[in-house]
Image (cartoon, rainbow, N blue to C red; front, top):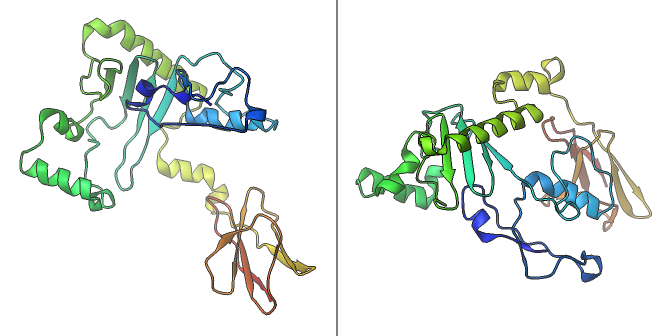
Length: 277
């Protein structure tokens, strides 16, 4: 699979990606070692893999198959929400040249104290240099408030140091990106205005966190079989007191061992454990 174009991921929204598959399954128009200059989003990965596997694509997926659908994207989008103990909410849209960012917390700096992040050596050094007044003006921008809107010329400012949102030269671009942002937020039913407490109420029927059903565990022909009635739950097991493992298929075990199993669905309470010897 062609690699993503370097100057597309050297700025802001960036994840280097390399994909390969057996030559027998490679599309004829995809040559090894070449670069793909299209904008590709994380949401495109699921529909692409589903189509490659010839599996049905659920209607709720937002992305597009970037292997079969060769029409390039005009825009890609990104979001940033609460970071550990700090409330934040940002949405971004970018095309091949410009990136627009909207903030719901315009006074919240990205360079804020975070208990976990502050343990990193690089953060200790940054905070020390800031205290010693040894950071230059560009380095200090990370500690500045972002304001409600930012617009960057990615091609000429890949590190996003010069906010163009108040430059009248870019008014047309700013309005275009604003409109695209508004249309995208409507199309995906973004919850930017919904509080976390309201979200929890929507997730929990009658305000109660659901519990994953206790799995069933059995032994047939010396193989352990684990099943659950909870849809979309994962199954875990452990042999004696060894670490937990993900159950994917029946497995054999020696005699006189204890196998413990449980089921887990993200956002639900874990099931009770069951054992077989």
